[in-house]
Length: 281
Image (tube, rainbow, N blue to C red; front, side):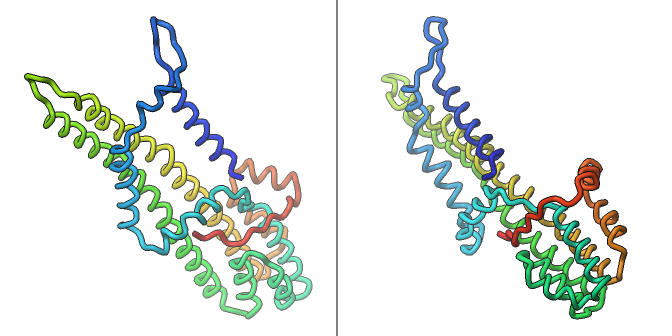
């Protein structure tokens, strides 16, 4: 499980609930969960939450909307693309290729769980032109990243729309309040209308910054990890095809990583290989 996302989200919700429940009585701070009902308003839910999801449905194709449960599964999955494991695997492939030739890599390709890695190996086994190999694989990465960007933009759309509908709800509440005002006899609906006006803004902010934004950020982070590992695969595969020395190949591929990660990889030797399949949205 993605513990940082779960801990952060749950912690934000808990803090929000306690913040709503605290109140001052006779200069004493007390905790009263009964007043949480003050923050429940059906009109605000319909205007803010209902309209936000309606706009998302109207803005994106059904195929993408149906994949939302899969997006959460990807986001919560603890499997991560580990650059070191891919570098170790590429160095091994380079050693096999130098001893037995590129055709010997076909068996290793069939053992790969990652379809991109498998495709990359088969391209050099089939003696595809190096420039064409790089072009095919880079095009695959670009198309994958574009699809991931479309998915993340769906949640970013929700993040931008929710506060807007919070303001719409505020206007609705203020309009109803002003329409219902009677300077002579007063009005019993002013409190409820003003409550709707303020609660919709609250709902919009919570929906945007506690729900949609963290999801979009996590999905973009996963995309960055996957793109990095696939770029390592591309350079590694092309270098293997060119017959590069395995030791030089390792040093070359480690340049994709931060210095601290490079030092750990060079000092720790081979890490555990955690090869994960493609996690495209």
